[in-house]
Length: 367
Image 1: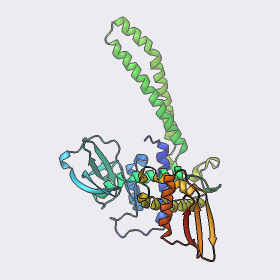
Image 2: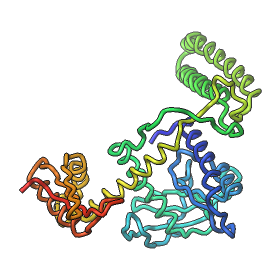
Image 3: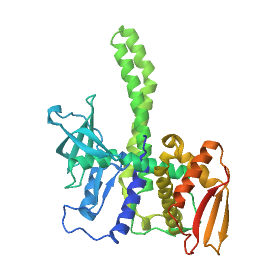
Image 4: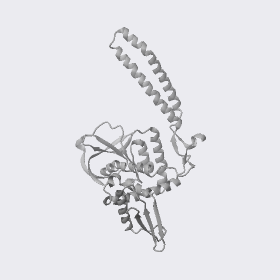
């Protein structure tokens, strides 16, 4: 996954904004050994000093992959243990040591693969077991797949209301001007590095030629040297401009016409809560339909989506206190048979329609 610095800062800012809101509703733990909660994520927001700040200021722990791992640990230090992964017991070779990153101390856990590769995880959680740390880190794909499925099938990211609201003016953010100058510096340095490589290549080639050919190579390199010097001057000028600007500023310090705001969130939170309940209902049906549908793992959720989107007739009977839901015919006989058996199972629950005394009876039109 390629992650930009901009996404890194956006994710960090979102977490920094959310943490105080959550902490306002959650009681602080009695001891420093128990975090308020633990964040598990990939390298998008990797910054050891920020991890330490989350723990020191908010008592929020972090579990993430370590970046730029160079040295390998002695394989004799790893031990075999069992842990839960996706509701299954798996065997891993793990090892834990302490490590200093950006002058901050972390627990580092590594998993040794059969091919000798060592996957490094760091955490600020002071007491979680090595097995659970590995399980949490490697299980995060379940959450990522969940949100991917929700975006694609439940329109999880869809806007439900228009409008904006102000952002806390005291909140600090990366200075847009500082970030833009940093981006320009990066590009100029990349261009200068490519020119330097060409110049060094010509000089290296000149060492294996006659004096006349070497002088000709130097003359041909003069334009490249001039361009490289020009980039060096531009880099120095950008550094001077950036030196007088803070790396982070508050929202209140931004120009009013560029000041950040955010979309209204109340309606979206309510909608997302409903969608998550719907997903749990879908998952519950998916888990019980195995005995009715042999290809459950392959296309069970596709069948449920078809059932949910197919027309149905509602027949309330206030005398017998029933509400009959008759599902229209599906795309093929196998799907109709599975839906019929699923209806028979749901009828055993004798569920009543909310806020009424009508018992729901599920049927299908297919014979």
